Length: 251
Image: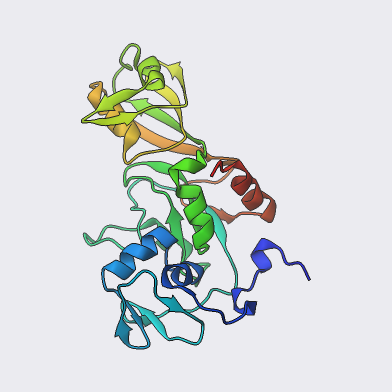
């Protein structure tokens, strides 16, 4: 019997061995790439023994713990779009004690959800959360070339020609940044579409041009716009939206 994405029960799979990082991703701990880092940091035990070897094979019969807490395969895959307010960190926890965006979802979801990509603390807008490691890895990889659309408002008039320079490509401190599309909305506002989204890319490009950002909002990820979601609100994605996002990936 064919099952849809949200009805997939991973515990229906045979008890075959799989790589530890894949198992952690299927448990909703993190993406495979992030799970590899967690393993390398010595935070994972298998049947009581610390394991740092990425090639380690495990099955559902093994007792696997992360930071001392046992993890299990998730029964249901969840995909959520959040309109993140400014002032929240995109992380599972924050060593500085700052509020984290995922806490907004805990009122409804008991599953461990993590963000696909990031928005910095002072940016707001669309962020996807999931417990599907394979989905997260595919979407977040630069080769997916998923469009991310932003509106940038500046405190002072936009530097002349910044939109065209960003479109052609700008090198800042040895890193090359290039927008897929830019459009001047008014003297203080610009639309920017990225397909890679390097760390704090827009802020670094604008700072290099001597422009102070007043507000930075992500309004779209691939086929997902914010719609009527108010800041702090979230909604679960439909199977059609999840499949649509995956179909846009070029990797």
